Image 1: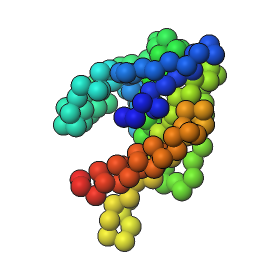
Image 2: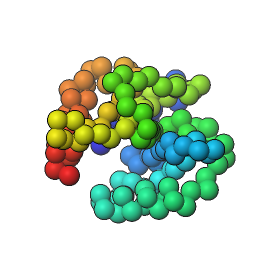
Image 3: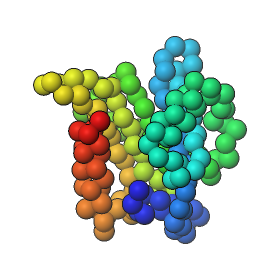
Image 4: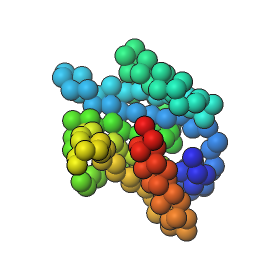
Length: 150
């Protein structure tokens, strides 16, 4: 991941974090509505291990998001999964503490013109990426290449 997605502003100071946890709110429907998953040390995992840990975390989640220290929740990488929502534009909540954390939301997977598509919404603090906007383009190209190869 590019370094600018690992910067956070805490109490007016910018920090660079090398291995932040990844927080996933996953829409599962029913009475629970969401399954909260947090995965640590993602940077050391290959794709196969990450997928296994992710699936295991969803199936065995007993996490109470309220038990996380607010700062950990505010600075972790945030990747939402809304598998029942097909969107073309999407804006979601931000935390009360503005840390510059980007939010990534994936939507409902569906087939369109004989290929699978996945909506993706990215919300980021312009202070993180304005001078480096090409990095967002590179991230999107990497994402599209991954989808094609899978």
